[in-house]
Amino acid sequence: MLERILLIVGLLAIASAGYWWWQRRQGRVREVHREGALSSETLGAKRGYRATFVQFSTPMCAKCPGTARLLTEVAAGHRQVVHLEIDASERLDLARELSVMRTPTTLVLDGDGVVVARMDGPPTREQAEAALATVPPSRPDYSI
Image (cartoon, rainbow, N blue to C red; front, side, top):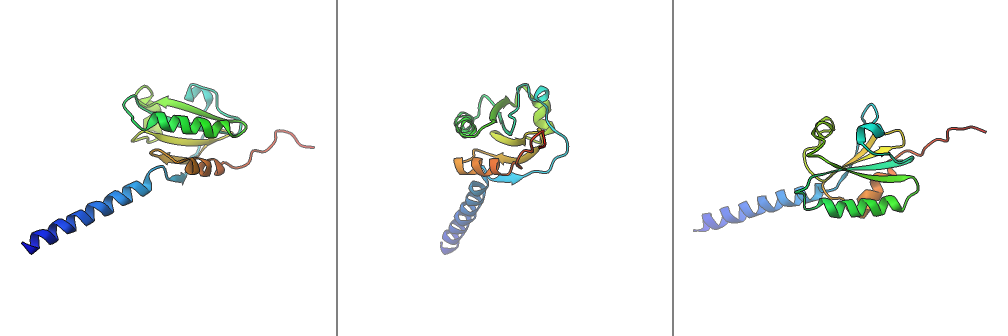
């Protein structure tokens, strides 16, 4: 009887540790170094001059609408930052090219369209702001 109780407690401890690890990864910002840029034509909408949140969603995603609202609010709080939402089920080619395996997945592009950060899962406001902070400052197109 004692062995069964210890086995159950052990299984619960392993399951709890696995859930804790999975929860800690939700929305975590990872810096990305990817060659090439995503153009406005590729995305199907105009990019932001300074930065762009590119959110991949699907119609069945429960967390996607909340993520879209959050990213729209964060983008509205910064000059020249745009939020784009792409339906991954309609743009499988782009989702595969960018290794989008789940939704919501958000890529942060700099002003040139290069991916500088990635958030898998629903981010918090702080995580979205931190991802935006990874965008290098833009250089003016002119000199004095």
